[in-house]
Image 1: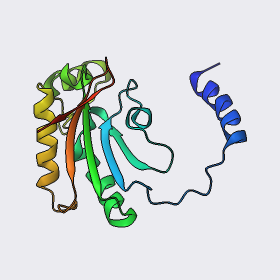
Image 2: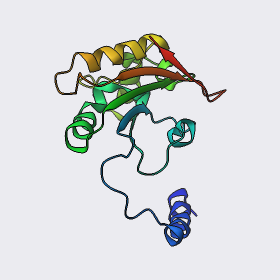
Image 3: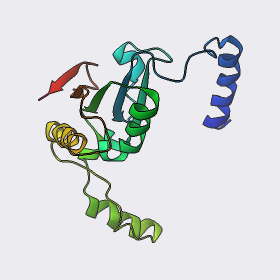
Image 4: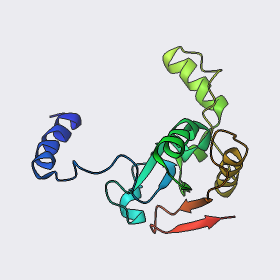
Length: 163
């Protein structure tokens, strides 16, 4: 059985006991979280959240530039009033450069990705600061709400604030 088929079977059991169908559209805790897609991070468990509490926006590296569209919708249409940006230790984005990935794509798939910024980084804390700056320099997102940056340690489960 494929992994997707296994997930479909699990969903049947989940749906039988599902009782969250009446949750309102806006997140109850009025917070948006931008974090990495890394499978070792469970934002709900790590942050004490349940369904309906928060918008969790995930992408490779937890990069704000890729999350701006979602943040605009979260804030403007759904009322979020705080933003947490969370990167993490042992991130795959620390392991390559744009040039290396573009070369690999050319060699393995014969595609030109020169127009794509994959947004890797070499310094974890600086990547958080950079994303805080991207947020702060965007006129699309609210500048009147708290926006804070963190590093999640995949070995301990702890968050550390980056200033």
